[in-house]
Image 1 (spheres, rainbow, N blue to C red):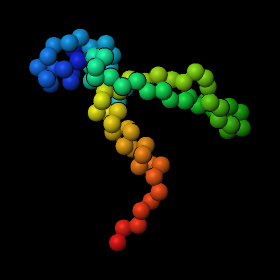
Image 2: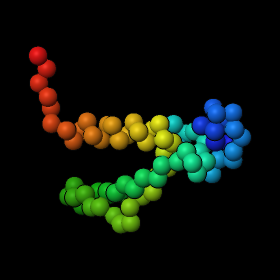
Image 3: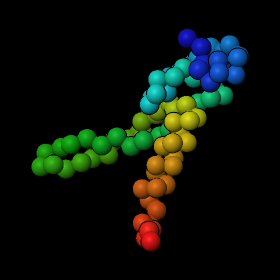
Length: 81
């Protein structure tokens, strides 16, 4: 499999991973690594965070999209007139 973004630039480069969201093949130049906590349910509906953090690979486009989504979720609501 080749890197999808490199292919869009008419370059043939072997993919070393796959985007966790869109499934595109990724080379090292077009990969963003993420770290996410893993939570498990235990007795009486308690949620426990497990270490170490889970690693994920995203393409740059999905990484930018996730970053924008996280910023929007953590910003105060603005009134619309």
